[in-house]
Length: 263
Image (tube, rainbow, N blue to C red; front, side, top):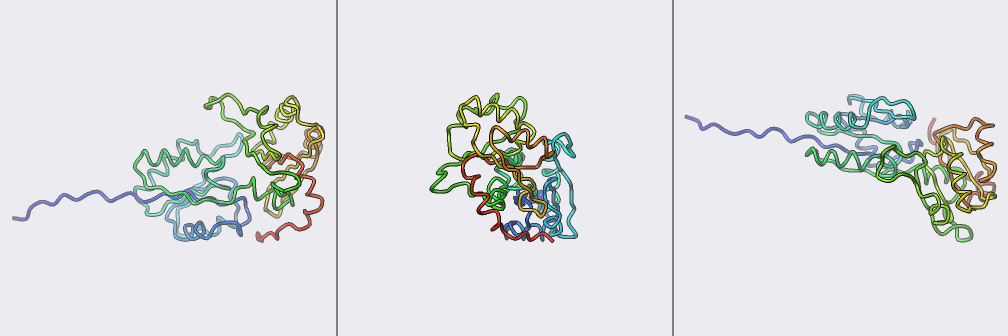
């Protein structure tokens, strides 16, 4: 008589939180590209560019989890649940996120949930738009003559979060360069707060929309003028806001921008 053998259930697959970068496929990391080419499932965000989506393994299941302001394909808890479920049957599950997963990308939230669910997970950093978009616009975030410090901050805060609001008083005087993600919608409030904090109304401001893509465009103004300029130009999201004297280098350096690799 053969003794019964206890068979352990198969281990779940692994989830990779991959930063897709801001859009130019040339900025995707080699590790990220390799994972896309061998993925079994890819759950991707709305701002991931089509040339990067084209790198995905043709046999992979592709799931859009895109979130844009006011338009949600999936809620955050639904996305996490899909990742957990897919990891039970697929070896390589890629969560493809625009920019860098850990820079205003909710990657930390998703990773905590996956760890707590017992799902193996790894993060693959990406080039964040707060660095790449200014670079493609000819705006260095630091420069020995203009700025020795940078602050990255979100301009769109979730209701009911751990603290009531960004401390714009501290932000205004905390560094020479301020980079704001998701700040176009709240720009009138943000500029008013910075003005009240004592930041000069002549402080240069640049907005860079669709950074690193062929449709990239810039809007240059000051703390005093930028809101009216945005309204006049109907300059909408997605855009990065750069505040500080480094913006003055745009006029000299914008002609040296990297070549777009997106066809």
